[in-house]
Image 1 (cartoon, rainbow, N blue to C red):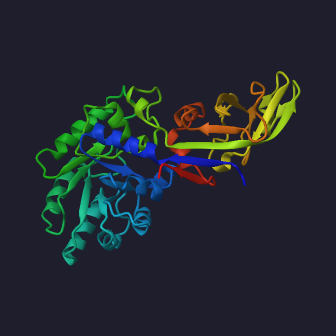
Image 2 (image 1 turned 135 degrees about the vertical axis):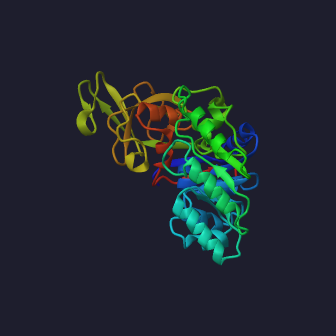
Image 3 (image 1 turned 120 degrees about the vertical axis):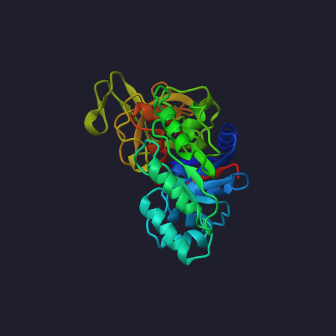
Amino acid sequence: MRPARALIDLDALRHNYRLARRLGGGKALAVIKADAYGHGAVRCAQALEGEADGFAVACIEEALELRQAGIRAPILLLEGFFEADELALVVEHRLWTAVGSPWQVEAVERFAATSAASLHVWLKLDSGMHRLGLSPDEFRAAHARLSALPQLAPLTMMSHLARADELDCVRTGEQAQVFSAATAGLAGQTSLCNSPALLGWPQVRSDWVRPGLMLYGANPFPDGTPLPGELKPVMTLESRVFAVRELAAGEPLGYGARFVAERPTRVGVVAMGYADGYPQFAPNGTPVRIDGRPGQLIGRVSMDMLTVDLSEHPQAGIGSAVTLWGAAPLAATLAERCHSSAYRLLCGLKRVPRHYLGG
């Protein structure tokens, strides 16, 4: 059996959720959209359901998968609904929905006029990201209109921070001020903080927080901050050496001959490639761990294989364990080396079977 696999540490996931909730000082929705950033939404939700205040997903398909798996906690649709007809499913499956476009406000009003069912709406303000959300004037008007509907539960007011992962940028403070002004005097709880806001902006807080990347133990800041040191990586991506080659000085390795041996080089061929989600253009010298010791990638990553330098690892050979990311090297470290992001690496995992640890 091909040895590539991802180990998912559910105890680490729970630790990171507790950290997020403690930092937020209120309630926390665990963001498990995109199959929990590649970690498996159902298993992650099951691991957290005993203590999570709720979950957040992108769309109703992701929510229904969780409900079918027996998840009973609140689930928020971050993108809201795409068709007005989905509102019946939202009610049937006890979902919460974001509302961030004028047409969605109108759809909620029409639905409420014909249904006695209760809706939980998270009204979204565009505080400066300019992707989804109502302008401040539209927001206050929509709040008044929706609050007048007896079928609606008390509104939650939300927005999204665009540059909270840039600690030297004033935009986060500006957005927080816009949000505070737009929600001033309005009834309802608030939700503003994402992972970087929780870790890097203690002056920005809300009633509900929405940790995503930090749940999975990845640092959202390129230069690091003290708090991410408390995060525990949840995923360890690993495989094994299944062939060993000897290269003479001057010989090339792999596609494009991007690596040429400067000395006799012992090469390990590892069952892991870009079809599994490892970056195709990871450069020579990208860190890995070989039997627990620091090692490095050499040669271009293939669809199903990559190659590592075994010259300084005389103990290594067929069957040696190779860690691609986890506690070391960190996914964020690999992402920076590959001009990518931890988000993309984790969400891009595919084909590799997941093995769950910690119940």
